[in-house]
Length: 460
Ligand SMILES: *Cc1c(COP(=O)(O)O)cnc(C)c1O
Image 1 (tube, rainbow, N blue to C red):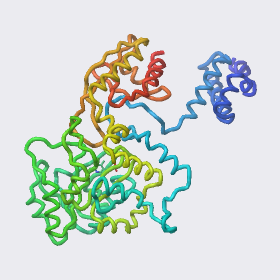
Image 2 (cartoon, protein in one colour):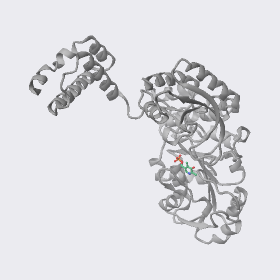
Image 3 (cartoon, helix red, strand yellow):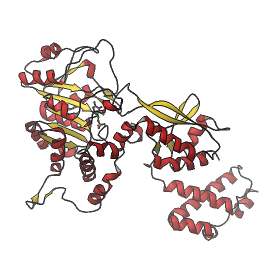
Image 4 (cartoon, rainbow, N blue to C red):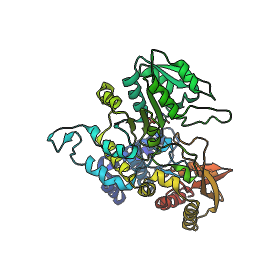
């Protein structure tokens, strides 16, 4: 029985002659298509032998299945998704999106030779670290700048260079752990320093820092409590007080801001947080922050502050191991240039744009999407909801948002959610009260057609 079935399976060469298969070869490669045919035929053979299949699939069916295998195999592991969750800096979805405005900059540096380490004016070897100095100085008032791979690296390099073998005083209220196993006490130890915890979880006073200072003390470290908030009976010591105390005792004052920002977002409904410039103005010696959180640029760790300290960091062997590549530098420089005009930054840097969208504009987007989807088999409602900045910034704060809720006559919200993850460009959604939610803060108008296609495919 199975022997006879096996003999009916068409030969690979015959399948290759089909017009649909030729078209596939044109779109992908012959190697890919042949390998997909082989994979499918092997699968059929196995199913026949296991007595799970009692009929050889038609040529039409074979073509459809082979096309699916080719497509799937062609997909990159790292690929585009659509973020409809309302969490702007979604750590799992790549944090900040780069501005379309900086595309040319990245292309021109990535696909051509560049002056990465060449000083054109003096016709001699240059440094990759010079390219961002002027722009960051201008935006933050810093004396000097160093950019490394990410902010975790920035903290490690700062501590290792300036206070290795010394004690580093940090408040118990600021012993942060962020996702991916970055813990402040561990990073301090890794840098060679010894963490000295002072104060309590909810209150740390200036005298707690004062009492901890001895001959072995190297630095007073403040850490932004990026992903949690201590509420109620609380007290933290200001940047001004920390920097003053450090200076009096000839110590270094450091602030790991995490998600550093150049713009005051309090006018968009978020709590006030000092900008990088304000923290430096308060007298702190070294400030570190991420490139791809609230700044809205590529992954990077930015160190700003006193020249004498940053000069030392540049000479540390670790700097070479943490160095940024040219595409990062190109993307960061171009992103930062947008900040020279705050209006430009707010309009063209996606992270800033999403934070600053007004409720009217969000309602406008929801109306457009509702109309676009009106011919589909979904019940669509527009409602107000809450979105968040995410990415370890503004913990426990929400942005007002507008969402489009979808209900399908046959599919449950969880089933629909699952199917939307399986389409060509997966749509990441949220479920609330058994309804599927698309949040207008993160879903971009240019993605509406893709959402529509995905919904059509998912509801098939
Ligand atoms: C996010 C964050 C870091 C790590 O920054 P990466 O750029 O993710 O390496 C370090 N410290 C604080 C306080 C943070 O919020």
